[in-house]
Image 1: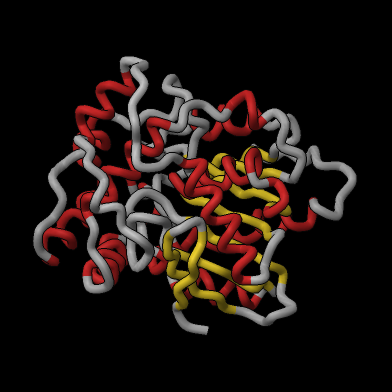
Image 2: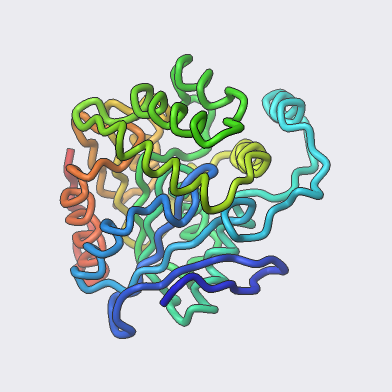
Length: 303
């Protein structure tokens, strides 16, 4: 099944589904500015080989999903206002993005599903578990955080790169990807060529740099999920690298602490990416999380 367009919540979402119709339903949710192709094809294929029916999609404002280019918003001024605690009108929040994902699962006939989110995608699947529980069987939150401002904040170097002007050419995008790999990629598994290839793939698909700014606003406008995470009933696994400089490890620790039964997996040498060398470890944790939906003892902990 190739890419398909679905009408949900008054917008269009682009999705792709792979795997047998009787496979275990699994939704992959990507992070800030990332497209569905940011989940590597081989990563998806390996999940299908493990028995999953896998859906990946473009979040609103990226890729081939609806762009909110008509939204009149000064990103930096809005972020400053939010930091001061001021009330600000924003185009959308993480709650809207969680509702998109839940509605998409309905459209695909895959609800309820096991949901896996990376970075901002982790925030979205957390919000799904809180606000769209009917759509969620289990949650794996990878290299993410709770929305609390005292944890998970980027280092100065990572923040400077995050807010740098967007690339204007393919070569600039590739150079930025290589720089990102050295700034917040996994020190134990550097792969600048893989990062460059992802950048070329995304550049030649769809570009929407303004959408990245609006997604950053959505993250900052959504507030803390810590208290609400305490009420999540489905199995939750929190995976975080101990070398993450973009969403520092305290974000993962707070997330795991917020969910009383959560499994916390802190991976040595992992930064803010999904290096191929760690795929088996991550997929094993996904399998274990799915298995816990049939396990009466959800208290397995891994450090």
